[in-house]
Length: 58
Image (cartoon, rainbow, N blue to C red; front, side, top):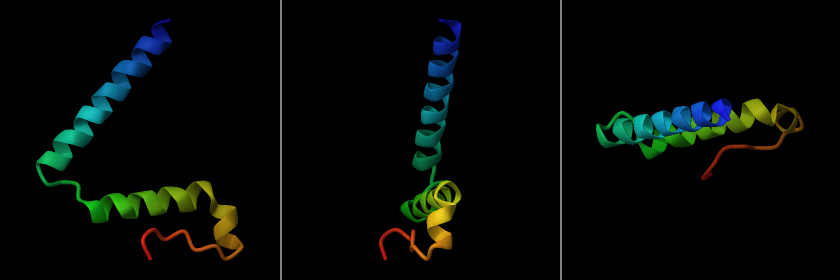
């Protein structure tokens, strides 16, 4: 049960941090798209090696 509460608190902390960063101009749609593309390429690296284009919005 402690693990779930700790995980929930961490998730809320991160979500609040994302909101504050967005509100203060540290995050933008372009940055978020770049991060999403990078994460896709990291987790789906085998598709990249097969020639799949993981760029979003192109």
